[in-house]
Length: 368
Image (cartoon, rainbow, N blue to C red; front, side, top):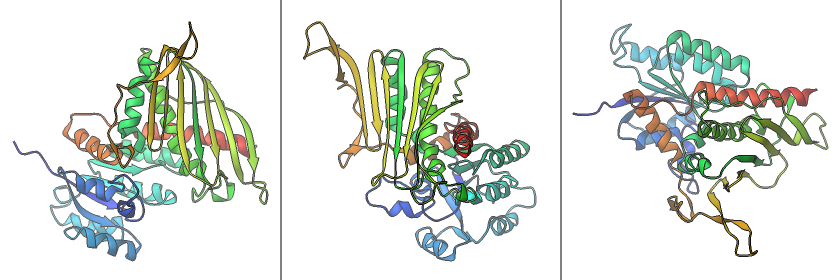
C-alpha cells in the first residue's frame, strides 16, 4: 500500500527556514526547507516571505513550489483548488519560521486556515500573553502544534534521557549557556533580540526534557516538568548600560532533583551549550557536538574506592569527528508519524510554553 505524501509550506525563508541549509560546518539538514525536502513522505508546495530577495533564493532551490509574499496570498491561491471548504489544495503542514516578533500574527493567520499540523519555530512567542493567544486559537480550530525545540528530537539528547535510569538518584543538573549576545535587555522586549529568549529557551527546554525523563523513571504519572521560584545570583550588568544583563545564575530545587542550576553568559567570546547531570551511580555530560556517559566502577587510583568510568557501550553515530544527532530530520519524521497516527508529538505547544514560563519568571525578578 502506497503511503500518503503530505504537502508542506514554509513561511519564513530566511535563516532557519532555508539559509542554514547551506552552512557547510553544520550538521545537515539544518533548515526547515532542507529537512522537509529530505523526507520522502513530504512535498513542499509553497514558500512565503515578505522579503523578495529571500523568496527569490528559495524559489531557485524549490522550483516546483509556488511562492507568495504573505500567508493570505497563499491561501487565496489554494482556495480555488478545491472549493471553499475543501482542503485538497492546501498544505497539510505549515512551518512558521519567521522572526520572534511575528510569531503571534503569522501563527494566528495560519491556524485560522486549519492545517493538519503547524510546526512553530522556537520560542513559542515573545511572552506568555502571546503564547496564550496561540493556544486559544489552536484549541478553537483544533490545530496541533509542534514546537521546534530541536534537542528533543536529537539522538544524543534522547540517549541522555534514556541513560538517566542508569545513574541512580539524580543529585544535580547544571546547565550552561555561553554567548556574546546580551543576555537580557528590556528595550528589546518587542523584538526578542536578547539571548535569554533566543538561546535560553533551548537551555531551559532541554533541562525540562531531562527532568521529565527523571520523573518517568521515578514512576510519576504526569511527567510534565516546570521550574519555579528561582534564586538568582551572579548577576552582572553591562558596564555601559546598567539595564542590560550580561550574566546570571538561576538555582532551583525540585522533586526528584535537589539542585538545578542554570548559568547563562552574554559576554563570552565563544558560544557554548552544555548540561552536566550527576547521579549517585554515574554522570551524563553532554553539549553541542559531544556526549559522554559515565558509571561507577572500581577505582584505578584508590583501593577500596569507586570512581566514574566512561561507558564504552554507548556508541553514538559520528561524522567529521562529532556526534551526529539527526535533530532536524527526526523532527520532520515525528511530524509525519504524528499525521500517520503512529506517534505523539515530542515537542508540543505545552512544553514550549513551559520553557517560556521559566524565562518569564527570571525576567520578572531581573526587573525588580
